[in-house]
Amino acid sequence: MKIVQIIRSLKGGGAEKVVQTLAKAFVSLGHESIIITLIDQDKENIVLDGVELIYTSSKSLISMLKTINADLILAHMKTPQKILKNVYMDNLFFVIHSTQSERLKQRRFLTKILYGIRIKRLQKLFNGHKLITVSKGIADDLVNELNVVPDSLHTIYNPFDRVEIQHKSSEAVEIEKPYILHAGRLEKVKRQDMLLKAYAKSNRREDLVILGDGSQLDTLKKLVQKLHLASKVHFLGWKENPYPYIKNAELFVLSSEVEGLPTVLIESLILHTPIVSTNCKSGPEEILIGPLKNYLVEVNNVDKLAQKINEAMKNKPEIVPEYYLRFDAKEVAKEYLALTH
Image 1 (tube, rainbow, N blue to C red):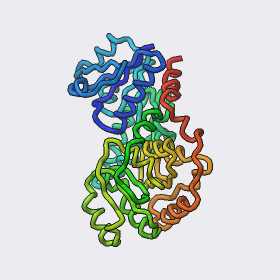
Image 2 (cartoon, helix red, strand yellow):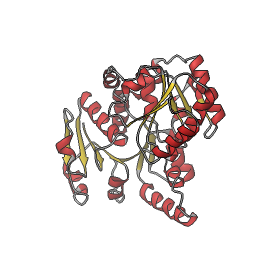
Image 3 (cartoon, rainbow, N blue to C red):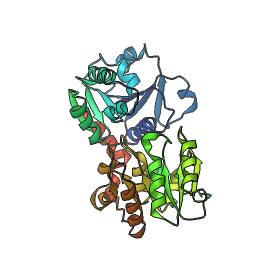
Image 4 (tube, rainbow, N blue to C red):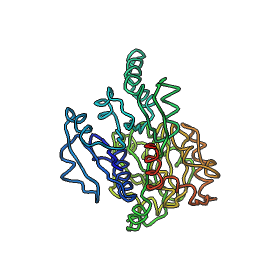
């Protein structure tokens, strides 16, 4: 079977990483795997064993797809989806990686009229197409918040290469003291300010390590000073390989207002690191199942977040394979392949 995935670029850690992991999984299952990018430099800098990387211009994408004759075409993110919005084929699926209405709401200066216009544009983009969302929360948002009417709608979780993650986690970290970990873009929507306040209230002896860069770094550093946490909170910046930090952490904490499917939570489960997370839209409640649901906290509740941090540290929950095997790359790839039947 020939599977084609289309994405603007392979540079990045979100959907771009998903595309690469999925492409390799298709190859491992014995299928022909192709990635088409719309940014030329990708082919020179990224090598994926067994995966064919093709660059094409936006203008040539549709004609190229006709010549490839694929069994399954997956268009990831808005750029290729906009190019293909008037193309309707039985084997073409749009893959949606984020909660669309929440992303619009985060734009502070968007008036009610502009918000309505953006909603109409999204409806025109997605209506009548075969859609795949990476979480049930995203699917619910499309239908109930945006009133999108797709030709079909499936939820398939993001794929994770457990062997690769576990292998990369074996590297040493430079941190000697026990620590609680947070990783993510330092932006308002990630609510690291709430994390810092909750950490201060928890009175934990463990340090707090934060991985990531973003526009809120200086603001967060000032908050650290105000909370008298300068000796205990460490901003280490973005790390190409965060897995050793996740593996060696006593606890991982997510404080976001909104997510799509927070991959770092799944990576934490794979590395058997306990988690406390806000129950934001969307993803956390789909990832933290069974007894792990006890460690979900409502958004913007500093006291509850502090309480759950202490609970998780006192009684670390057991993480069993059933919590993360459903995200295994080969199993996820099989779900995509089933769409061709």
